[in-house]
Length: 218
Image (tube, rainbow, N blue to C red; front, side):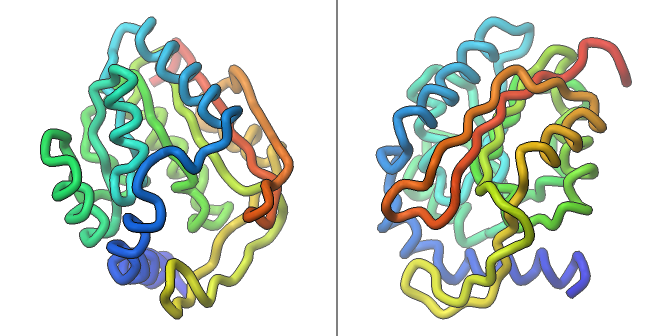
């Protein structure tokens, strides 16, 4: 499957499950306490920086966008799925949501203080990460921060059932080492990283990385 077909498959799958996803995961209460700690650290770093606007890149139905807003962040949610964006806009009409892709964010160079990518890279194969992380670098001000989470492992899992629907989609697994390498290649340094064992309803270890865009560099 080429990149365009893969993106189209991700879009159509999340369009299909959007309403069910929002019903099953209505808010951020699912997140583990240590995950929340990393999110709060990210928000603190953004608040201390020169720019305080954040993109929730891969926002889905907007549940984490709403969390960021309650933490005081000026946030815009972006997702490739128009169905997810429709749900997000209906649920949180006071917030801004747009259809967009991780590798083509609708922001000017050095516009944002933060990029929040909560499990949004999990449908991107490793070869796509350099381009995605370069895009994160582009939209961040020097010294800006990115927070990303992912499932730890190697290879990918095939999803045939999700949120009550039959689907066909790949979920990528990444090692912390490869994420560190790709972030460094894009001009980021890892400020903090957290990995934890899977909880009862999770099948893999989970990781959250807080990274900082270098102050120098174009």
